[in-house]
Image 1 (cartoon, rainbow, N blue to C red):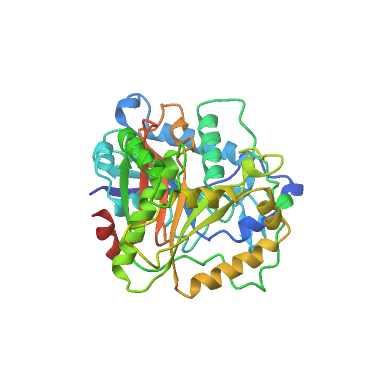
Image 2: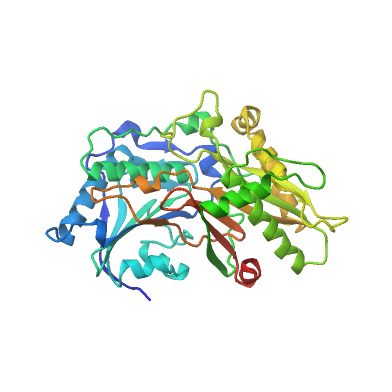
Length: 421
C-alpha cells in the first residue's frame, strides 16, 4: 500500500495578468450541460528514465511551478472561477499545486494498480465535491526516484481533448520549447449558451452515490485482432461491418458482456443503450482545430432491444454502434447550435428515468497523445485515469506500446465480479 505524505500546498497564478478585456469568458452550451466533475489523468515517470542524481526535488518542483505559471498565461480561464453556470471569471485566482512524497516504489504501484489508491496521487476528489479550483495538480515524488504527476481539470470547462492539449503545452513549456500551439476559447460563438431553467435535465444527471468499483481490462495486439475478426463476422441476420476499428471491436465486446450481466439480474425485457462520446471538432464545417478549447463532444445513442427470441444470444451490436456514431453529422450539429437539441436531451432523460433502459457509456481516449507528455525527462512509462462517479462507464485508453487498449470499466461493486467472469 502506497503511503502518500502531503508536503506542501499552494496556489499557482498566471505569470502575466489576464487583460481586462478577456476577464469574462462565456461558457458554451456544451459547457453548461457538462457534469460538475473533474477529468483525472496521472502520468508516471520511472526511475530508469530519469536522471535526477544531481537535481533536487525542490528544483524539479520549481521547474514545474514556473512552467505551469507561464502556461496559464495562455490558458488563462483555467486559473479563474465559474459563475452561475454562465461564464468564467478569469480573475487569475490560480490553480492548486500540491507536492507529495510517496513512500513506495513506482514500479510496485504500476505493476498491480490498486484503483482505490490511485486517487491518492490527485490533489482533489474527481467527483468534484467541494470544487475550489478549476485545475488541480499534484506532484508525487517516489522514494525510488520516480515521479507521478496527477492532473484534474473541471469537466465544466474542458473535455479530454482539451485537457491533454493543455498538459502537452505545459510539458513543452517546461522542457524549454518556444513555439507552443495556442489555444482559442471561441466555442461559445459556435454553441451559444442557453437559459436551461425550463428543461428537466441538470448537469448532475448520471452522477451516482452508489458504490462504484473500477477494473482495468487489457487488450493486447493479438486480442484486438481476434476481437476485430469476430466483430467483422456476419451475424445470423446477415448484418456485417467491414474493417472494424479496435475501438469499435472492444466497445462491441464489452457492451455484449454488459448486456449478459444485466439480463442475468433482471426478469423483464429492457432496452439496452450504448452511449459513445463523439468529438465534434472534426465533424463541424469547416472542421475545428484540436486547439479549440472547451467541451466539444456529444453522445451518440445505439439502441438494442433483447425482447423476443434469445436463442442466438445477443445480436450483432457493431452495425448499430457504427450507425449511431455516423448520425453525429452536420445536421445534428446544427440542432445543437440552434438549441433544438435541448428538447431531445429532455426527452432522453424522461425516457431513461422510467427505468426501462440500461445504459453503457463509452469514451475513447485511445488517440489522445498522452504518451507524448515529456517535461524534459522523457515520456511517461504509464498513463491512467481513476474511478469516476458514474455507473456503467467505460474509458478506453492506449497501452504504453501503442498497439493495445486498456478498458477502464466503472460498475456497481455487485456487478463487477459477474462482469469479470
